[in-house]
Image (cartoon, rainbow over all chains, first blue to last red; front, top):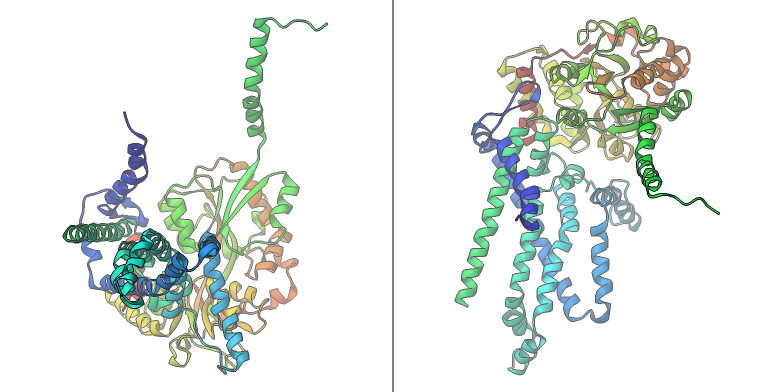
Length: 272
Length: 353
C-alpha cells in the first residue's frame, strides 16, 4: 500500500524534480519551443565564465546576508530566551508579523522608505544630516537590506529554539564553578547553541541563493543574481531548458552542501 | 391529511432533487457569456469594459500583464482560458509560429472600416488575418525637466557619464538591441554575429551608468524623481506625467522605432462569438478614443480621432508630425534563429561583470 508520505513525495517532490531534469536535458527550438532530446549542452553553457560571475556574486550576497542575520539575530534570540520573560510571546509575534505580510508588499514599502523622495531621505534632510537626497535604492546596500529584512526570522527562530533547549542548570553550574559571564557564554551557551546557529545559517543561506524578487525590485544591474538569471530564462529569454539546467545545478550543489555539512556535524558529535 | 409518499415516489423525488443542481448548472453554463481578456497593464479606459458589459450582457474577465514575455510564457506553456490577447507587431510571427493565435473569421466584424489604412496590410500581417490594431506608440526617452533643464536630444545622452546612476533602460531585447544597431549604423535585419558583438559591447559600456533595467517599474521611479532619464515607451511617460508634471518625452534625433499593439484571438478559445463582439466594441470610434485619452498612446482608429481630446491629437509626442515620423521605423520581422541571437546578446549584457 502506498503510504500518504510516499504519495506526497511522489507528487510534490519526485515528479517536479524529474520534469526539471528532463527539461534540463532538452533543447531550445524555434520560437522558443522545447525540443525533447538528450543533450548536455545546457550544462556546458551554464559553466561558462560569464555565468560564473553571477554565481559568485550570488554567493557573496547570500553569505553577507547570512552573516548579518546571524550578528543581528543572535542577540535578539538570546534576549528572547533569557530575558524576555512573559513578554516573549509578544516579541515572537512581532517578529513574525512582517513575515506574514506578502513579500511584494514589504518590498514596495522599502521602495517607499528608501527612495530619493522617501521617508528616510526626508527624515535625514529635515534633521540637516544631509543636504541632498541619498541614492540608496537600487544599490547593493538596498538589496542586502531587503534580504536581511526578509530572512531574519529564518535565523532567529532556530537560534531561539536551540537556546531554549539549554538546561538553565548548566549555566548555573558554570557560574558555581567560578566561570564569569563571558566564559560561561563562550564555553557553555555558545557551544550548546551551535546546532541552532548552523540550522539558522542554512535556512537563511539556501533561500537567499534563489531569491530574485528582492534584487529585481530593490537592485540594479550590479546586483543581478542567479535567481534573476533563472527567472529571465523562463520569461524574457524563453529558454526553459537552460533555465532548468541552471536550477538543477543550483539544487544539486545546495543539497550536496547540506548533506556534507550534516555528515561533518555527525562526525563532530561522535568525537565529542 | 397529507398524502403518504410511497417509497417509489420518494426515490423519484430524490433523484430529481439530487440532479437539480447539476441541471441548473448546465442551464447556467449555456447562458454564461464571457470573454477572458489578457492585456498590458494600464492599457484600457476606465469604463471601457463595464460599458461593454452594459451594452452586451457579456462579462469580461480582465487580466493584465506587465511584461510581454510573461504573457508569451503563459500562452506557450498552454495556459487555457484566455480568449483575447494583445500582441505587439514583431511578436506576431512567433505567436503564429507557436500556433497560439487564430485568424479572424471574415465578414463577422462590422467596424473594421474604422481602422486607419496606414495600419492595414502590414508586413507582420499582410492579409489582415490575425490582427486588429489596438494602440500604437514609440520608443524614446522620458526625462525629468526639473533635473534636466537642457532636454536630451540624442540616444547618446544615455551613455553620458554625467548621468551615471540616474538612468533606466528598458529591460527588453527588442528595444535595446535595435537601438544599438541603429546607433552603430547597422541594419536591424543583420545576421552577422560580429554586428551583435559590437552592439553587445556598446550596451555593456552603458551598463555601469544604469540604475535599473526595467520595462514597468521605471514609471514609478520617474514619478518619484529617482531618475533623470529613462528609455521609455511614449504613453507610459505621458501617463506618468499626470502624477509628476515635470516629466516629458522625446524621440531622439537619431531616430527610433514605432510599434503597434494588436488584438489577437487565442486558439482554442471557448468564447469566440463573444470575443468578436468585444473586438467590434473596441473598434467603435468613441470607445477607442476614450481608451487613447486615458492611456495617452496613439490610436490607429481613424473614426476615434473625431472624438479624441484635441490636445492629445495635436501632441507631437503622441502623433508625431510628418517631419518626425520620418525618423520612425517599424521593427523588422526576424527568423527564429536570429531571434535567439537577439535574446542571447541581451542576456550577455545583463550578466556582464
